Amino acid sequence: MAVKLRMTRMGRRHRPFFRINAVESRTPRDGRVLEKLGHYDPIEKDKSKQVVLNVERIKYWLDKGAIPSDTVSQILLQQGIKNKYAEVKSARRARARATARAKGRPFTKAERIAAEKKAEAAEEKAKAEVEIKAKVETEAAEEKAKPETKPAEEKAEAEVEIKAKVETEAAEEKPKPETKPAEEKAEAEVEIKAKVETEAAEQKPKPETKPAEKKAEAEVEIKAKVETEAAEEKPKPETKPAEEKAKVEAEAAEEKVEAEVEIKAKVEAKAAEEKPKAKIAKKAKAKAEPKAKEEVAEEAKAKTEAKAEAQKKPPSPKLKKKKKKPIRVKKTDKSDEN
Image (cartoon, rainbow, N blue to C red):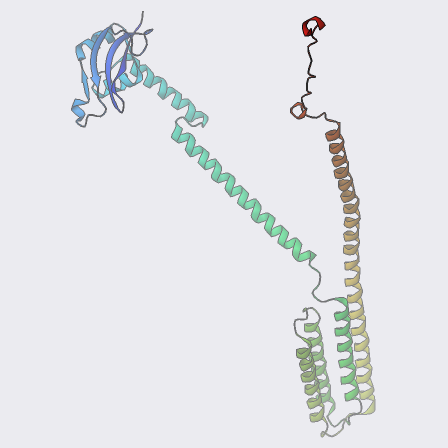
C-alpha cells in the first residue's frame, strides 16, 4: 500500500487549520491517519509559526517512498526539505515548457491570455484597415456617381449667354470708326478675345453657385469693361486700310464658328455619358419589381397556410365541456309502496 503525505482540514468555518499527516493513498481526506507530522495555519500572522513540522519523521517517510501532495511538497521546499517527487515534477515541467516554446504555444495561463490579447489586437487592426479601405472606395464611387451640379438646361442657357456676349462685342466693334494704328488695334483685339475666352472657360467647368442677381451684376461689369475699352479707342485716328479690317473680321468669324463647334461637341459628349447611367437605373428598377412581387406573394401564401393549419387543429382538451351524467331514479316495487 502506497503512503502519501497530505493535509486534512480542521478548524471551524472561516477559520481553517490544516494538519500534515502520513496517510494511506486509499483513505479519504479525513480518514484514518498513520502518523501526525505537523500542521499549517494560514491565518497566523507570524510566518515562523505558520508551519510546524517534525523533520525527522518526514524524512523517514520520504526515505520509505512516501509521495507528498503538491501543496505539501511546496511547504517542504520552503522549509528546505528536498524530495525526489518535487525534483521529477520540476524537470518534467521544464521539459514541457521547452517543447511548448519550441512549437510557439503558450505554456502558462498568463502566456495564453497574452497571446489571445495579441491576436485580438491584430484582428482589430485588420478590421480597421478593411473599414478604412471600404470607406475610401465608397467615397470615390459616390463622387464618380454624383450627377453634375449643373443641369442640361442651365448649361444651355450659359452657352447661349456666352454666344450673345461674343456677338454683341463683335457688333459693337464693327460700326465704330477705327482711329487706332494697325499694330495697337490688333493687340487690343487679342487682349479682348483672351479675356472673353478666359471668362467663358472659368464659367463652363464650375457649377453655378451664384444666384441670378450676382450673375447679372457680373455680366453688367463685363459689358461696362468692353464699352469703356471701345470708348477709349474712338478718338484715335484711323490708319488701318480696308483689307486689314476684312481680315480681322474673317478671323473673328472663324473663331466664333470654332467656339460654337467645341461647345456643341462638349454638350453631346456629356449627353452620351448620361444615357448609359439612365439605362442602368431602369434595368435595376425592372429587376427589383418582380422580386418584390414574389416576396409579397410568398408572404400571402404563408399567411393562408397558417390560417388553414389553425382551422384544422382540434380544440384543446381543456376547453371540452364535461357532459352531465343523467340522473337515474331507482324503481321501487309496488309491494313496497303498499
